[in-house]
Image 1 (tube, rainbow, N blue to C red):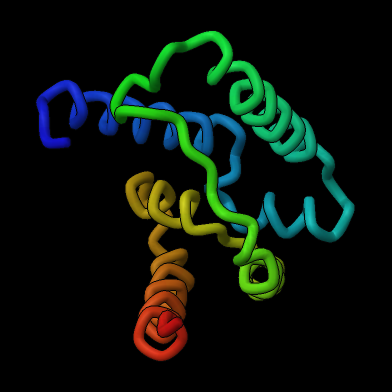
Image 2 (tube, helix red, strand yellow):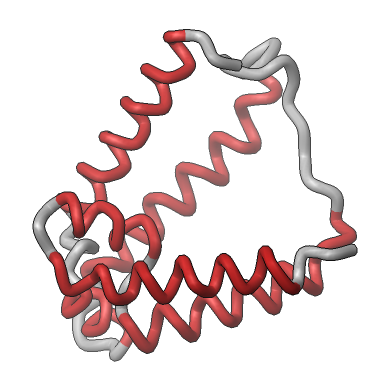
Length: 138
């Protein structure tokens, strides 16, 4: 779908996401690492709010809306990929824990002038390339 409203919604969603990351101080790897070391639990509120709101919307939206805003119908992902998802989540979590940088905050951090996160972003892009190149075959 390449309509103007589609791109406006994407831009607005990205801006809101970036603002939320910045407001929550998640752009700073030091804050994330202190959370992961159980020294500062401020990000627990961010995690709980985001997870709770997303879970609520995923449960309620299909019953309230006749169809999603930008696509034809609601859909769900097949359960057959659980093993790959869990392995990917573990690798993602280990990388996040070591670097203190998540992809969303890394991109937003560069936009906010936090240039050292570019090293983590380059590593993420390298990992995505390796996954796409060698492990995406069925």
